[in-house]
Amino acid sequence: MGIQPETMMQIHSTGIVTAHGRGVAALENALANEWRTPPAFDLPGADLRVPAFRVPGDALEDKSVLKKMRRADRLGKMAVIAAYDAWTGSGLGDTPPEKVGVLLASGLGPHVRTFKFLDGILDFGDAAVSPTDFSHSVHNAAAAYITARLQTHGPTQTVTDFDFAFQHALRIARCWLVENRCDAVLAGAAEELGAVMMHVCNRMLDIPRDGRPKPFAFSDAPSVVPGEGAVFFALTLPAGQETAPCIAATTETAPDPDLVILDAGGMSGPETEYPDMVHPETPVANYTPLFGSMMTGSAFQCAVAARMLEKSRCFANPLAETARNIRVCRLQTDGDIGRIHCLKRGKNGRWQNIRLQRSAPPIPSGL
Image (cartoon, rainbow, N blue to C red):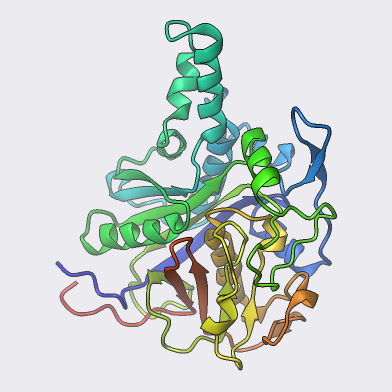
């Protein structure tokens, strides 16, 4: 059974946790207000403070959602809260549990717990290392927590890739839906910012000490302010003429969008080619300065895009003063936004696009 590239998925609800807190309302509040410098954190083992977008502790303290997750790490808690909010807000609660799939995309997965497990081997030996650290270092641990909390029994998978993990997850979600393996899919991304990652970013990337990245500089050595968070979307195939936003990952960029979000977050090497991928008259955006640079930043860009389609509103770009020779949305404006592209370049020079639009095209016959 062929999967047609024009087959899109309807977004019923979004759950999100970022440095600005929990929920779409917190994200929208950050979009509507003036950009603020992220706080600086002590870099363990070094006399240095590094700016970063970290999820506040109070966003992960919902005991009703996180019950039976006492031993879970931050990655698991962020993923569960975002997935729970997306699912409970979707209106899809009557879907049979065996027909609900879960897809978690991540660049580095549970690397914090993995390094803790490796430290345990060095400190205590193979026979005495913590089995809890081992079980939580497995990449699928966070996704397993989601299925346990929501009591879903459908296919569950974790997708890892340094560049296009979320794009791959969207393609798998579409396959599951079109092939009738699932009636609904929770697809999202989660990243945790640990001490090792902070050291790597500090040593190998350009972290501006004032916490102000340059999202539109498009340089050979882009600046990075690292971040963490989780975002999930409740997806189905469109059933009719719904007006809810729809989404699909593709390598195609046509038809011409009303807005292009350039996912230039600094994690995938040189960004000089981004301006060449956009028509000079097409408005562009980049919301990375709101949630920080992550390998799965495209998922967070798509959360902003979905909100813009729902409200027919273009949110102002933070730190747009770095833009040169491109048309950037500098002010929040209301208007007819129907199609948005989220474009990303990988380290290998390949490009991936995520198309979002206000309503879905007809499903091809025979699917």
